[in-house]
Image (cartoon, rainbow, N blue to C red; front, side):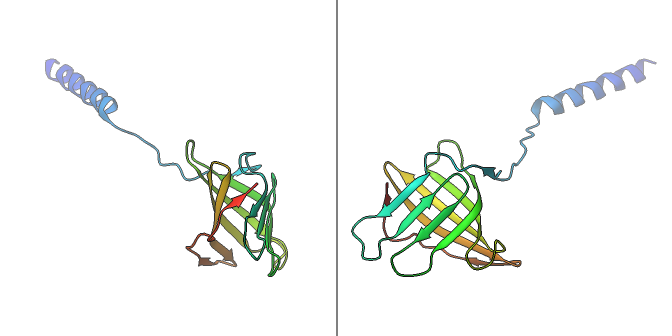
Length: 141
């Protein structure tokens, strides 16, 4: 009986110690949210360039256009953003050429009154095309 009591106490203590000293941090994937935050909404324009780039962001759409060239337009835009970070990640369904089948991914860095834009990934029918360079200028409101 004494032996059974000691085993029960030892088991209880070891379970308690494992609960106290375990670090159970759950890894959370980036959560995509609807309605782009107002911090980056609006019409952002390139200053001083020849092509007059414009990036318009609303709560659920974005459009990147230039005087010359095809626009990139997307709807059903979602975003994720880490608190305290200057980076916003946008994802939207391209509407002009693929009727929403193509996904466009943008990384937007907001610093003060300007943003920098990177189209870092395009995905269509299971194929992804990575990009790595920011556009070479800032956009201002």
